[in-house]
Image (cartoon, rainbow, N blue to C red; front, side, top):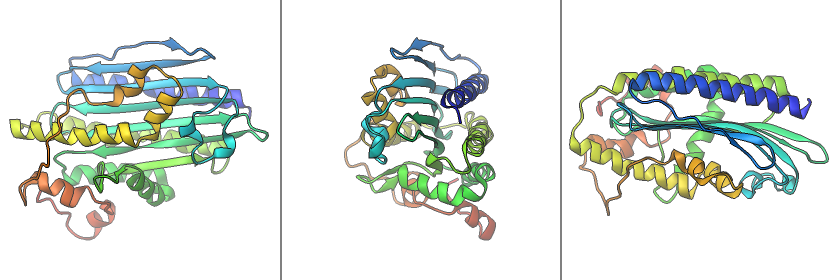
Length: 310
């Protein structure tokens, strides 16, 4: 594998995927468009952040592309592989977040990345995945999300789902961030061609997994109380991104423009001291039932899925 050719192939795919996702999300919103900036990096490469704000149905969406070249990987990228520290590298990635206006439409995140490290023996790997964070979940939506993820990941779905449940977890809250999805690290299985094909399957499955859910829920009526709850739960999202997420740490450590690094944060959020939802309410069921690791597909195929929160 030629490193420059591999980076070029991954870069082209991520740029095309960024363009497609921005086009589709803007079409769903119907009012706002994505901004487009191109920022050259000091040692080469490119940052291309794209943000949609204050739309008719999407309060904020950020779809970011980066191609970085550096003399040493940031600590967040070498924590699991300390032997790679101090080596020159190239990295290219796409990362996105969607914060809908409607509390019934779920928030989502995806990132895909490719690293090449110029060690004594060159090292390369893919990583990434996606997850879903609903505030008023619908079991049918969650099952669709996971069925699409399972079709993309194939035999690897159980392991990647488990990894997602474990990673997108707030230990200080003892709850999952959302209802899971896929997550993988240090992926080089089967060589470059097979790993790149696998990564493309994951990336290509994002819109089929998420777009139908967004389109279905953005027109549902909601109350001021439900909007307040959405903003309260967005606080959990901010907590994860700022305190736990390796991608945020990587961006800050690598010297990227802070506006791009923190573009994933929701535009509005609230915290309430010692909030306790009413027992049996939809807000209570979110944490009591939905934000627990579950085998959504087995439950859907075996016994009736609990839709009491619908």
